[in-house]
Image: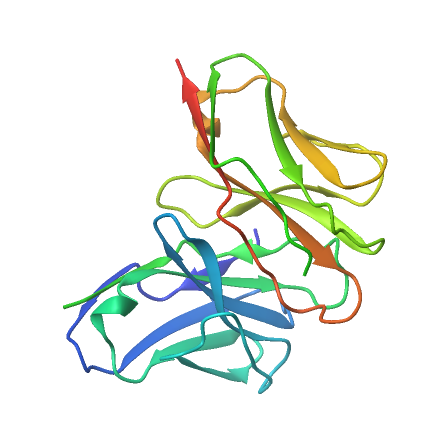
Length: 114
Length: 112
C-alpha cells in the first residue's frame, strides 16, 4: 500500500511558537506538496517541491517555509505561528513527469494556534 | 493551470446514479482531467482520470465532452459512503508540470 504519513494528526500551539509539520512518503516520489484547507476555501497550495532540495512557492506561501533534505521527507515550517494559521494541513506526493499519475495525500494535520 | 468550475453542492438518494459536472472551458490539448474526493476528516483520494476518451473503473465513470470543455463524474449507485467533497482538477503535461491546484469542489450529500 502506498503511504503518505503526516507526523501529527492534532496539534495545539501558542502564538509565536515555531511549528514543524513533517511528512514522509514511502513511494520514492519526486514531487511533494503542502496544502492547507479551510471551510469554504477548498485546498490551497502553500509550497511544493519537485525534487530534493528544490522548492517553489504555491499560492499562499506567506508565513511558511519548507525543507526537503531527503527525497522521502517534506517539512512545513511555521516560523512564528499566528492564529490565522489555524487550519488543516495536507501533504501530498506524486511521481514526476506524467500528468496521468495519481496524487497521494496524507490524512491531514489539524493545527490550532491559540 | 486551467481553471475548473464545479457546483458548490449536490444531493442524491442512496442507490441512485449521481452525475457530478465540471466545466473547464480553457482546457488545453495536453491537460488531463483528474477527479479526487475527500471524505470527512480524511485527505483526498484519487477517483479517476482521463484525457479524451471516457473512462471506467471500479469506483466511477468519467464522461468527457467531445470538445473537452466539460466532463462528468458518474457514480452509478450512490451509497452513504460516497458522501464527500469531489474535486475536478486539470493536470498540464507540459510547462509548469509540478503545481497542483484544487478548487472548492462539490459537496455531495447522499440521502438514505
